[in-house]
Every structure is written in C-alpha cells, then in structure tokens.
Image (tube, rainbow, N blue to C red):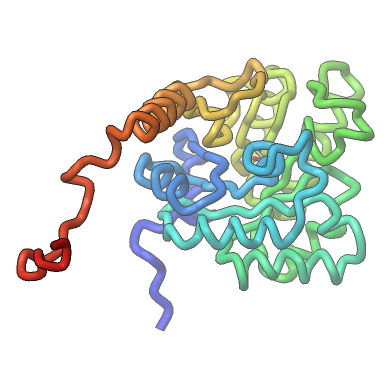
Length: 281
Ligand code: KIV
C-alpha cells in the first residue's frame, strides 16, 4: 500500500507555498548530520549541490565532481530521512552527452541515492534533456543566470543578465522551462529587478541565490551560512554564525590538552574490574 511519509514536503507542497505567498527556505547540504540539522530547522528543500566540489573537496570550481560523488552524498542526506524535498544536482558532464545516458544518470539519483528530484543547470540548450527526464517521471529543478558549470565559457563567476539582451534571454528561458514542466527554477547571481520580473511572471517557484529578495525562496550553502568556509564569500551570502572560530578554538584546546597530558583524565578513562586488581601487582 502506498503510504506517503507524514509531513513530507513534495513538489506540490512547494507549488502551494508559492500560491499562498509563503517563502521557501532551501539549503545545500552534503551529509547526514547537516541534513538533519537543516531538516530540524524547518528547511523545505535540501539540495545536494555540486558546490561540494568547492565546499568539501577543496576544488576551484565544480567541474571535476563526478556522478559517483553526487550519488554518494545524496545517499548520506537521504539517510537523514528529512521532511524536506531532497534534490540532487546533476554534475558537469552527466547530462551533456546522449539523452539515454542523461536519463540513466538521473535515475541513479532516485534509485541509488534516494533523491526525490534532480537539478540541472542551463536554459534552452538543455530543453531536450529536461523533457526526457520529465518523461521518465523525474521532477526537475532548473537553474538559470550564473551557472557555475559554465565558468570556463563565461570567463569566471560573473553576475548574469545585467544588460537587456541577456536579461530577455533569461526571462524567455524561465518561461519556456515552466511550460516544459520543471517544478522550480534556481536563479543565481542576477539583478534583483530581473528576478522580480521572472518570479511575478511564473506560477512555479523561483529559488534565489544572489538574486535579491523578490524570489519565492532562497538557497544558501550550509557551510557558508554557518560560517565554516574559510575562503572569501560572495556578497550575497549572509553568515548566521562563526562556526569556524568555534571549531578552531576547540581544536587548539584539544592539542594543548594532549600536549600537556591534561586529556584524558580519570573520568575519561576505563578501569579494570575491581576483582582483578591483582593483575597489576
Ligand atoms: O551546487 C549548489 O549548491 C547550487 C546552489 C548554490 C544553487 O547549485
């Protein structure tokens, strides 16, 4: 018998939030503990983003992230059984070849990873593959504006759509993606006026990152918002805590205590059973 999990957030739930004018909170997370924290905080979408290439793997961009990396991290997030919708990011190269291979890759996220939807970057060039994924019953989240997998072609991580032609192209892509049937669109690093126009023109939710306050929801990377990232962050990141400083202090104190033999103490150690005290004699 089909039993949907109690309180599970679905693509329909997200559509209803937009209709009711309620904002959607999304977070990019990569593992069990952070997924659990995000879920407990009431996040609506957990995106297993390929930003893990930078945030976890220490790379300069996302281009070398593999399908296996993404499926593995999706499975860690799914194991937290969050009420939030779990969306996996299709990494660079996983949907740029044949349609058959792209569908096969997307199915891996659902079957092996436990994802409930996939996200993929790009506009009109990706319509065919998006249609094929939808035909395979996989909910798709699109991603327009600054698409980090295009970093080499764009010549860097640059704000997109500041001028009329590009702005019109992004708006037209968003409208066409809604017609195709995607359930939401991430808008990354575009002017807030453009994001406002797109959000007002669409019935599906827009999820902004560096796209201003008028999107239907917002997404930030977990490690950025808790202040665990040591590199320079873009201006659109709001850091809600300085976790890095807390971890650094804890580790410095641990090293000091080990070096001075203050750790471990008697309470942190085990004892022989009292009946075999003679063992030590
Ligand atoms: O990879 C990622 O985390 C993303 C979000 C920032 C939208 O694509």
